[in-house]
Structures are given as C-alpha cells and as structure tokens.
Amino acid sequence: MPGGIYAALSGMRTRMERLDRIAEDIANSGTAGYKGDRATTVVAERESFGDTLASAVDVMSAQPKVDFREGAVVATGRDLDLAIEGSGFFSIQTPAGVRYTRSGHFTRAADGTITTPDGDPLLGDGGPLRLPPGQLDFGADGTIRVGKTTVGRPSVTVFSDMSQLVRENGVRFRALDSLTPATAPDSRIRSGMLEQSNVLPTERMAQLIGTSRSFDALQRGIVVLMNDIDARAITELGRR
Image 1: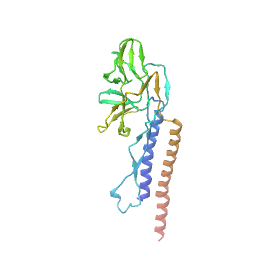
Image 2: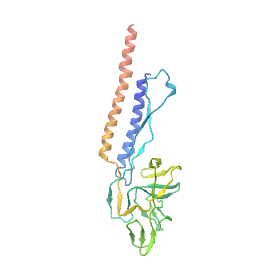
Image 3: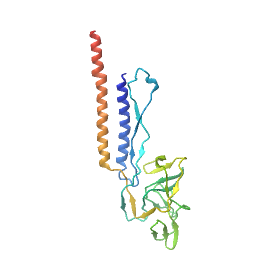
Image 4: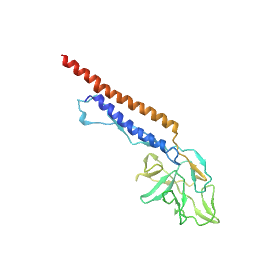
C-alpha cells in the first residue's frame, strides 16, 4: 500500500477524534464551569514502515489540552450557586479522593452538608462544610454564616502547572501525584453567581465544519490513490 494512503488514513483518524472532542464541547456549552479542549497531534514513528514506506507521514492524536480560561459569570439569585473570581478551583471530596472543579452549583443535603449535584461534599478549610438550619449569609471573602454561627469558607485551590490536571468528567479534575495543591486565601467567592462554560458555540461550529471538510478531502484523496492512480498503473503495465 502506498505511503500516501497511510498518511491519509492516519489523518482521517485524528480528524474523527477531533470531531468527537468538538461535539463534546458543543454539547457542554451550557454546562456551568465546563472547560473546553484544544486538540493536538504528533508524528507517530512506525519502525515497521522501514524503507518501503519511508515517504509516509503517520500522525496520531496527542493528549488534548484543556482550555482553563474563565467563562462568563452570570447571576442566578440562588444562595448556593458560587463563583470564584480569578484562578482556583473548589475542592470536593469524592470516594476516589479530592477532586477539583470550577462548577459552583451546590445543594444542601438532608444533614446540612453542602454537596455537588452528585452528592460529593464541598470542602472548607476544616473539612466538609455543613450548614445548620437558618438563613445563609455570605461574606465578601466567601465566608458562610448562618445567623451568628460561622460555618466556614469553601476551600479554593490553585496549582502552579494546570497542564498536570486530568479531566475525569465534564467539570471535574484530578491532580497528578507530582502536582502540589496550594490554597488561595485571598480569592473572592461570589454567592448567587455561576461561572458559565468557556466554550463559544459559534467558534466550535466553525471548527466542526472545517474539520469535516478536511476529513472529506482526505477521503477523496484515498479514492483517487486507490482507484484512479492504481488502476491507471495496472492498465499501463498491462500494455507493456
């Protein structure tokens, strides 16, 4: 098989994977705290190609890079909708360990614990935050009070290298063991606000169209290589 076909096939594969990522971004464009992906590719070295396919350039998808730029903050008027101004993540306790998110949509469990919609507790400086009965009040620094009782402040965690954060689902991230989390005591938490997704649907739709056209072009190239050029070569060789 000519090396050009390998190059085109590998290009089609990476574009299919890119289409999947773009579709996921578009589907989550309305998800609070969602961060989009940036697709990348790398050259794949194939020792088995040898001299026979020395002209082939094989590519594959690399680990996608998360775009951690902040999304727009909108008012919801709901006390337990929280938004972080600036960098940092909310820390939540999951069965698999501490995880990090920019999605500030929280709720109150039956025992008063502040949790994510999945039931994972929101962590404060001293552990999970638990609310007694009463009216909530949020200070300018995010400190939660119920009546005269100070409940605590949601922990805001920052990282020196956010490329070492691994996405576990749409809005939740895991820190690699080599990454040391640090607290951000001066960060501001706003109640009654939610950070929206940083995905621009119009931008992703343009990428979707461009990637689809690129895939179609590679597909047509393979047809030309396999049918037209090969058929002509066979015909000409047969005449000789």
